[in-house]
Image (cartoon, rainbow, N blue to C red; front, side):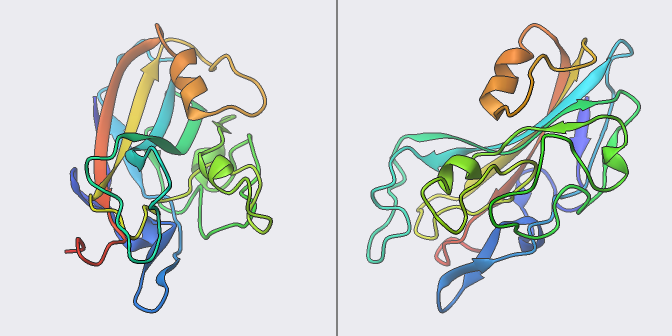
Length: 215
């Protein structure tokens, strides 16, 4: 299988248009247009019955002590964990493209609704969104707390000493529907599709909000 985007090449920077936040000289960061990038895939096995799309960042600090703190940096050798940015399931086998901005266009305080996926032609087919990890990130923020369904783009710590990777993975499955109900996470989907993956392909974009690393 092959997965690609017209917005960025594999291992190339993701444009700010598709990020949750962009650099700001006065305040470190400001909210961005937060559009989902376009995605296209081909080469799935003929017996494919549905697809699952997951985007995750494997470079998120495992501890938040230094995150976005003035006069401090997140050290490069700090252990890192996964942060899920997009979980889309039950993609019908005839759908092999997702248009830019069809599942996210702007930052929505308290998160976009779900699990039913809406917006653009990609929504026609009973697609469902999982919650991304902004759900837990904003859990204690009274202005932003909520269930964040669908895509929300990159917003790595502005003082992180490494550039983050954002891995988009499309999975071809031998089942019509992922056996999860209600609100579900990326980790739960990964577990639920074990033993059902016929093939997969990935595309990795990079992103940083640290002006020392940009460019």
